[in-house]
Amino acid sequence: MTTLDLPVASVVEEPRARFRDLVGSEWLKLWSLRSTGWSLLLGALVVVAFDFGTAWDHYRYWFQYDEGSRAAFVANDMALWDAFTYNAALVLILASAAMGAVAVVGEYGSGLIRTTFTAVPARSALMAAKVLVVAAVQAVFGAVAALGSFWSTQAMLSARDVGLPITHPGAGRIVVASALLAPVCAVAGMAVGALLRKGAVSIVGSVVLLLLLPAVLSDRRHLTAVLAHATPLHAWQRLGDAGPPAEELFPWSAGGAWLVFALWALGGAAVTVLAVRGRDQ
Amino acid sequence: MIEVRELTKRYGSTTAVDALAFTVRPGRVTGFLGPNGSGKSTTLRMILGLHTPTSGSVTVDGRPFTDRPRGLRHVGALLDAGDVHGGRTARAHLAVLARSNRLPLSRVDEVLEEVGLAGAAERRIGGYSLGMRQRLGIAGALLGDPPVLLFDEPLNGLDPEGVKWVRGLFRRLAAEGRTVFVSSHLMTEMEHTADELVVIGRGALIAAESLSEFAARGRRLSVTVGTPDRVRLTALLLGEGAEVEEEAGLLTVTGLSAARVGELALAHRVLLDQLTSRTASLEEAFMELTADSVEYPAGDAR
Image (tube, rainbow over all chains, first blue to last red; front, side, top):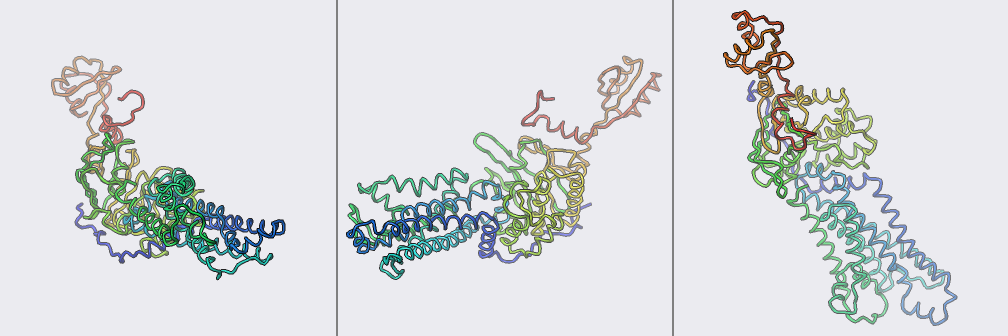
């Protein structure tokens, strides 16, 4: 028997490869895991709970503050400080970075990545689609957490007539900066995951990069202050600073803080997309 | 058609695959045999572009697989049944793959039906047995209706009914003109499945030929002879150019047929009380060929 008389199945009719099919596939991949919805819900609830707890504390003990403190609270727009607290930001960073890292290392840990890259040999395009889907979902997650915090805290403080509307100067910036902190940190977590490829190591790496490092960088020296300003946590703090300019040794502009957000998002996306090139999977 | 040319892969100082060259042709089932750790999986990964060769090249239907932006319509592969996420259902897992390659969702139900998982489609993969995962992996390979199919140890974990079904499936896929390349470390698995064999050991090619040619290697004729007059018969046989070994009162003769041994005995009036010819099995041929290249032998090497 020769092979010549056999039907040739090698001529493949194929529709054009579209990026949006990869986006659709990654969207399906994310939501077909039960843990996705639960993590997002739980994360948002914890973040809002931290903020609401602070606002409730101010409401509960309002009349135990002296007259001067109450006047300062109003004069300095301190209601906005309750709208998204530092602790809530730490929780948000932790949750988003971990979810971002898991979106990547979850595939490596299970070996699914080989199935994925066999189905889609255009690895970088696939990772770009993944970044897009995770960033979009995290942006919505951040917006829900930030708006939920703002609404619940200001409603609570309004019971003491000190709540502020979202149209108050600086309020919108706090909400937007807090909302965007989620996708920025999630993409950074993805980049760490794509580089390290191991679940536990990647999550620890993200925490060190996004939480520990900014915490230990002192703003008392120029070099460490510049490095600290280059982290998403400090950028968020700068943008959330709605009151009068604090006594800072090395002041920096809100524009610089937005730029830090943008660079982390773009840099993280670039690392995630490029890390899969040419490496044995 | 898969064309492997001088493919080499080194990890540090270890050479996993060493200047491997062979061609896998369409229209037949080709078995890819070698002991554990001989480089089969590494070779399959290089075919799929998951690993980059240190040197050499491999093409699938004339092009490196990594040139294809989407793979499922070109090559279907089952590398490891564990390459899935246990948290997804079988249908969701396949739907994700189908969506990425712009395949209609109806294909998901078709392949689930074909591999016999339609009833378990909504169950999470984490609760699947190894046999069910193998079936799911095969479903994934069939999704894009590709002309080339690769399977790494697909029979692991399958029950006898499953093994029979997989063999039938491979035959049918080959009969449809597809290239079917199936790895295994057991000759017995390939004996009833493959038409062609590619045998490797320690990353290097040992044989690339049809199953019948390979079998002929093992058919080194040996004849067992029993006679009261062993000394005289041995001298006669040696005179005819045969090799003779004596063990437990019986002579094992290689290089002469049973008929010729009988003739010789008759002509010289030597009494025979036993005359049996035997052939080595494919398994023995495989063991013999790969004996020198077993990576992790148990106890003393033969």
